[in-house]
Image (cartoon, rainbow, N blue to C red; front, side, top):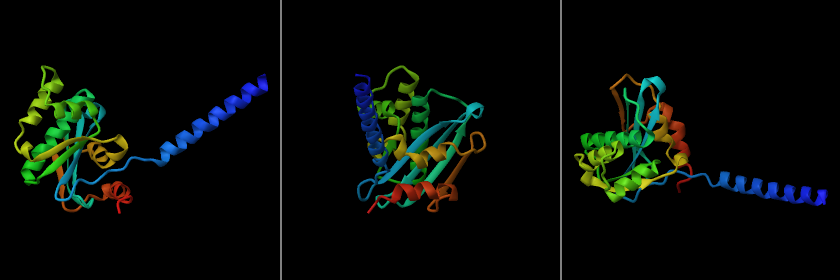
Length: 191
């Protein structure tokens, strides 16, 4: 009986290990937008006592880098609000650069669902979503999309870049060198 239990346990562990390996090989990658549209990926990062980092990157339907920007805010927000602030920052930059039409992609499902439903309430997240939905240039936004964290590495890297408080760094047309590896990994699966 003891040996039989051991064999069953062993088989169960082997099956679980196989499922884990299968999940690892199905890594989620960045997906390009439709032809003629650019995609804006956004992310926010907690910088500890340094506040919150906001990052955004724009790529076209071929995966080519178009634009990126980072900013550091003194405030620290709950994750969904911080992610919303990153989207608001991205919309400001998209309006400045006059890039459109575009779709916005975030790894915060709560935020994406709230924006899709245009559900505004009296919470801090509701206030940020209202600001997003009323932002200048938002009419050029084709869609609000959710992505997995693994497919948002470029924006994540940008959100954790150390810049001066309330200062924005941006790159137009040519990617900063610290993003090259993430951009390559994102585009390596594209045909």
